[in-house]
Length: 204
Ligand SMILES: C[S@@+](CC[C@H](N)C(=O)[O-])C[C@H]1O[C@@H](n2cnc3c(N)ncnc32)[C@H](O)[C@@H]1O
Picture 1 (tube, rainbow, N blue to C red):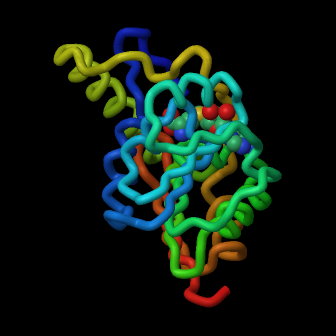
Picture 2 (tube, rainbow, N blue to C red):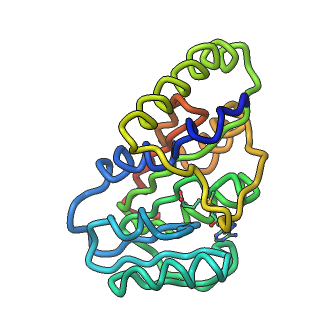
């Protein structure tokens, strides 16, 4: 990906956070945010009980200083003992996990009739990806410039936030979703993101 100069970089995850929150029912009973990082999404979820898990002790230490309303859990989502939740969210964290194992785990954490919403990163691999890239690169710069002018930009990534530079391709994500969460709606998004929305069957 072509890097913009520092002052034009902006947070694509925060951009999609508003969309992600709009997908969630208001006043859900329980919600789990997976790979919560500094907890911005978890703090905004409207549910009676919100749990947020992250494998980074430093992220949980910093997130837990920001809100008492969320139950902050330090652990690996793949192995930590967790319940089932009416709403499960994963913002920019599924690509930190092995795709199929991670998606199966997110599905297993979603209660019958519950909702799983993922906003994730994908790796360019197809001619369609390259075509979208021709639009994405200038759009990324224009949004960065507008945010810099308005002073609403800011650092895209906290220096302490764990990052991985690889992600599955969109065909890999669609194939895994068809198998593991059949019926899920997987959509390509601009700025190197995809969304996945899945309603768990009422009886599993
Ligand atoms: C790119 S950050 C995204 C953080 C946050 N969701 C956001 O959008 O700002 C990915 C997060 O996933 C966490 N993570 C990676 N592997 C994990 C695992 N196995 N279990 C729980 N969290 C994990 C990392 O520690 C990191 O905080």
